Image 1 (cartoon, rainbow, N blue to C red):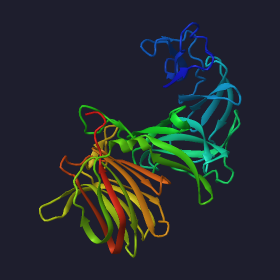
Image 2: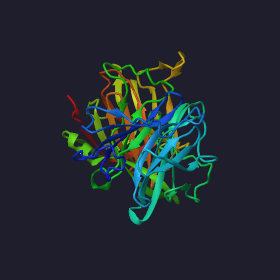
Image 3: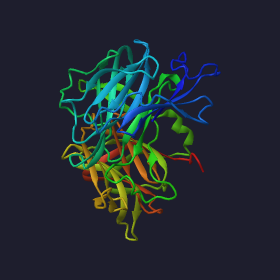
Image 4: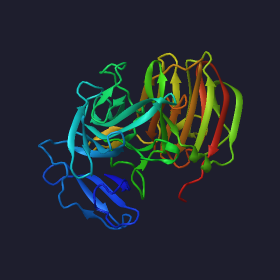
Length: 415
């Protein structure tokens, strides 16, 4: 469901005489099949009225027709809706949110089609901070499937003229641009008209392979940290960049810092925390593998018994997130089976100038990793023991050097 603060000339006519306008909810109704409907509120969301002529876009027999995202397109002076339709998205336009006309479809032969597309979003960004070179980003999540061992998300960069989204012709149609290489980032949606013109989103930290199985009380599931989006040219392609919003710095407590630390083998660091922000630059040197162990627990002999690992395997050219020792072995799936929660996710990566740059947020049950200023991101749920609060760095096969590593324990936002 999308809720709009309706202040653009009261195009719906719902708020005649209402000071400050009102709220309109655009949502997928299910009676008679999935369809798009409206509700509205003239008292700042305290009470809601369903539109009498719902649905505003009826079901035409499709099984999958859901998740509308609506925005105002100033160039055509109309509302635009992007909505998922199985393995594609449809675009519609409306002058008043009530009467909609079909515009176009995008998806056939493009990207990953291992499962149904869901939760689309469509928005403009400047490429390489150049206002004269604006592109449009279409994002969709991809449901539970064997190819990606669960659900995932992908994005497309191109142009939108008010009618049709066209992917950048420099990008091969079959190319899959995964939004987050971790296991647990889905259904992200951006905020319209964020302060300072920023484009910010959050995603659900979960996976449709095991959506109801988080061993947490008295809450179930959480959202990612807010991320600011931008576009950057990387190896000739316009690439979606994600970075933690700057406001998160307000949660920082006194830092722990090490500099010019030579690492050969296992090096525990003299800090304990279960909720922290970490930044580091590591020269990989002649090592075969280098990485961080977070939410670490050790036995009396010093051996690691629990940890989530953020690492770089130089021999295979892969960056990885590994929770095989993260504390939880299996979880229940939606169909009553079990899923091997103790997994490792990888993506191709080559460190620039032999240096890997990491920005990491660790919370009680999650790890979010931003690599090279957000060119890669990885999100992973992890459920370690409460006393798994250690942090270490390691290298194998050679020596690595930590140029600088800073850890800020983070205050809770709600306690």
